[in-house]
Image (tube, rainbow, N blue to C red; front, side, top):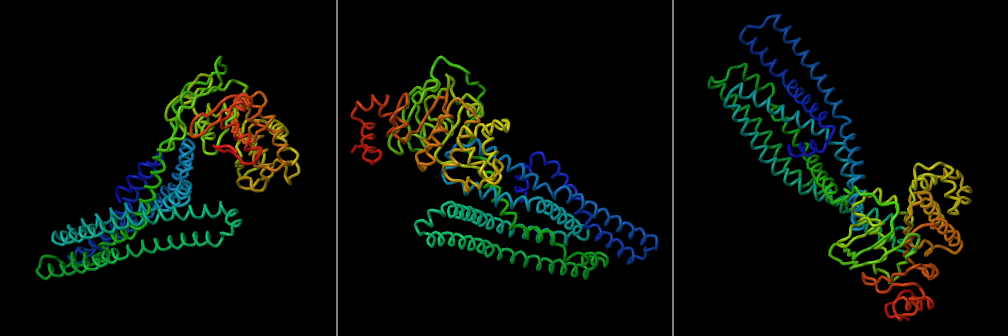
Length: 582
């Protein structure tokens, strides 16, 4: 429990002082909570020994009133300090997580971690921010109160104090077993909540495919099974926790009886005066109350501990290094882009091996070849979505690893087949290409991307809010808005995963016109799918099995009996890429 408090305190950043003061006032509240018992004992002793006077009773009454007011004040201050701290702290943590994820390699998001991220944001952080400050401050109050009560026991009688100490040590021993069991179960519980999040995301994102292939019943059963498993693990968590709580309750009860019995025994032997016996009776039934309350929170504490493990695990994931301080030259006598002996692997799986090529300014390089050969990986490495394993990628002679990521991305615009629009206005979706652009510049970009007319036909025009992912627009309309975003950015290098490969004929001509506007005066790296695109490239690289199988212009490659010529033949026969040809 102390370690959990330390973990949250260390993670609290600028809120440390606020939390520390909350603990101080919780400590003072804990002292004052038990002070009336001491005053009550003092009053009883005065009556028993005949020293009670009206003045003494008035003083005790005034002292009780002052203690009560101070307790209310300290309770209020502690609440004010801690009430919003959890929410403020994890509001900052969410921003930190966003900044951290922004610097992560793309591979992290393609390796099944979306459910983990969603679970950390929507479950783990929410649980801690709603519980941590109140629970931790209460823990401090319980610990302090239990210590004060134990001191009282030693004050009354050393034997009773020793008996109380033994009982407390026994409670702590059983509590250790409870904590170990709860920690194991809480980790399983939180992992299952992550699995449930992944199942829900998988079901909702794939609902179109599920319906198309009539898999609704099967996938619904999968989702239902995930809900049932979550229910089972949650119930198992409580069932495993309950016997330990029963054991603790038994110790509390037997310990109270033991203290009462020992006090009566000592009184009978003349070792304990009546005032001390009555003083013990005053608070004996609350003697182990603080520990009882403390371990009553153990379930929440262990879940919080597992939540912290999961949050820290995400923050511990390695970011792409971004310590570069070099600038990309505005001009260069050499190529705009150069790959030198570039190799890359996803984990242990080699994807690219010794890739070398140049791309000059204002030229177009087309990447062609069989699916899975590594074309998209080359484009992603240029944008530094991942870091290469060996070799160099140079932009105007500068190694891109030595350049700040933000500066690198200012040089590149990217248009892919799969478009994502945010649930925001169309204007904001376009203007994120260059947030400082004027409204007129955004409108001009929309016109160049051939999407102005359909935007103005919408109910609120540019202020129309599109559904998440752009669901309220057609695929071609989404694509044109993404191109408008890139036109507005006006970066000198364009990476194009041919955007017309999967759209209807009506949209294709508009998109081709939009791409023509985007590509004017730009250096192009195109992942080519259509023969018409490849024909006009200044250079074609045929990527197969992680290497460059062939390179040259369309005419040069057609003169060779290789993969490219087989591709063209297969295309004419509508057979797609083939290693063996038609």
